[in-house]
Length: 359
Image (cartoon, rainbow, N blue to C red; front, side, top):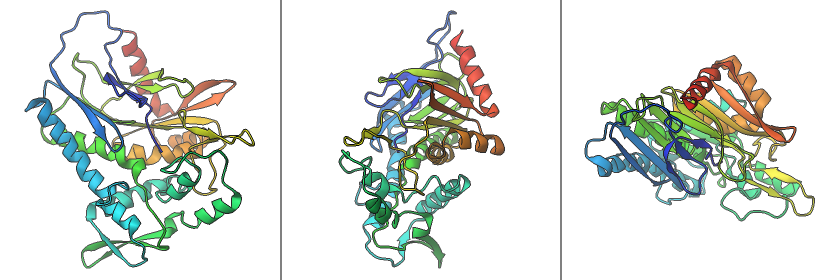
């Protein structure tokens, strides 16, 4: 599921609905801006941007190399498009015999499954065949909904019980219960990328920076004008990118998942289907929740949760957030307009975003 719904500081990422959105857009006082090193580029089929306040040693070239080396390592593990990537090789392995994988890939899979289990299996890395069946994956967009028989047949390949991780003789193995089972970790790729770059910058001693990989953000400290980094949640009902609500990141990771302009209409029945597929039913969700924003210490964790929470819908999402003490916000379509709700833990981020907007 594409998560392209955050706006944050100075660079337009073209066709994606992700923008760099600064805290200084409405400033009235004069401030002294520090020198920053800013780079942007493409990765994982989307765009990334990195902004290091005070400058990065070696300049733009060195910062680009740092970011792209981080992204390459992740793509070498989880890509389903690069035939040489670990996960792509596993997907093409037409056998139920153990397939050896790296400890890094094993950990990513374990952690993603754990996050999915926390939210009633709503995030499921085997859901890809259903996404493709409904025309939201690599296959051509459909003109009509698949039949119940087609859905039931594809569901045989979906579920956490369709694969197994093993650790034997100090080696990690992944097994399919059916040779046609395929795993897809794209739902956490952006978060993994944002975390990897942020953690490398922290290791090197940088204290003020923002990293954005599409809809996943990690930031620390302040921007070039000494203010808290601010992001914006996009209006999911606007035909073009439009700010719905500003928030401050407050040294946290922020991700958003949503059904922004990604749907198809059955030409025969006139029914509009969301691209958020419930792995349990095999059908697109029918609720009116359009987006879910998650704030966490880790962009990976937020990324692993937001897609599944979108599937669950706003009511269950907010209930889960309050129970587990998570800053969460949802946008729903009610009475002909988008409406935001959030947990009480989300309030400081909204308050800071509102205060900086008025300066």
